[in-house]
Length: 255
Image 1 (cartoon, rainbow, N blue to C red):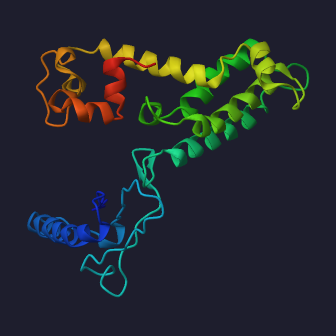
Image 2: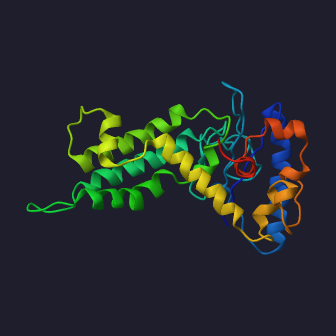
């Protein structure tokens, strides 16, 4: 059985290690009692921290191979369901991974066509929006939030669209990016992302009144879904003001 163990950040990361070790032992005994096997060598530990330059200590789980002499070291990035989480939840690695993947797809699209006739410009735009954009913006709702610095994150996605604009128009590589995108009929990346997030919030508003997602929103938008302790309805005004969340953006609109 695979096991992904995640360590949540506290004031001092070292204080969480004994608690996590104890919890791991409880999980091991429960799974053993149920007749399941816990493969210790597939366990992972990950620290969440907003502090710059903070060390991330390893942990000895008390089970081979991760004992006191060879503890389990924390990972630099945590991959879960295709999302890449870093220690500060900036999602720079996530955007870098998928922008690189999208760039590879764009370069592969250049092989379409033959020696007599290539792909028309309209078909190239269709290929970009149907094949490349969904890959490049995967997990957009995780990191495109109000109050987050996005200029550096969007830079890689803008480079992908710049290459697409050159492929569609056939312009020189030194052509101005804005003019090339205009000739190709492409919306600038920052506007495209804002439009897609707004569309996502609109789709959320069309969900049924009993949909579980509504339980995370404000009481006025919850419908008949039962409330949850960590939903927006159960938080104080001060916490809501400091909160950065996709649910908050969908509840209050995207600026």
